[in-house]
Length: 107
Image 1 (cartoon, rainbow, N blue to C red):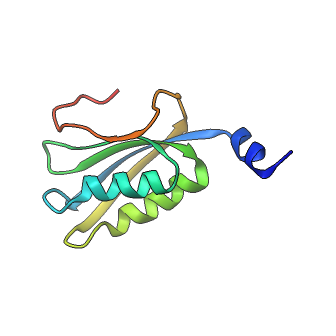
Image 2: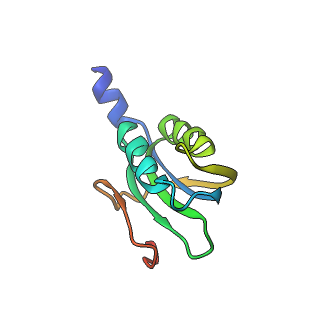
Image 3: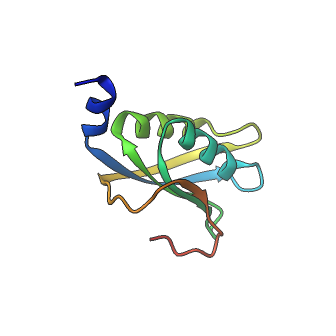
């Protein structure tokens, strides 16, 4: 079996994260989308009314862990004080990674 086929068979995981600090008004959602797409992840990111940025991403566990590392750094201008993460099995509900409006209730 080719390495592409083996990668396709790896179990997909789901990451739910909330990023706290100075993370709104600094391009954080666009940063997350760019990094997630670069890692081959699908899901969404949005601003929360409490000032945090929330996201759900699905894909290979190693890619999700790399995304968490990126979240802890953030883009230029951001100051991340905390990243809360939860992991679980992927639900397969996404086909791309999107930026959602802050009022979106998630999924």
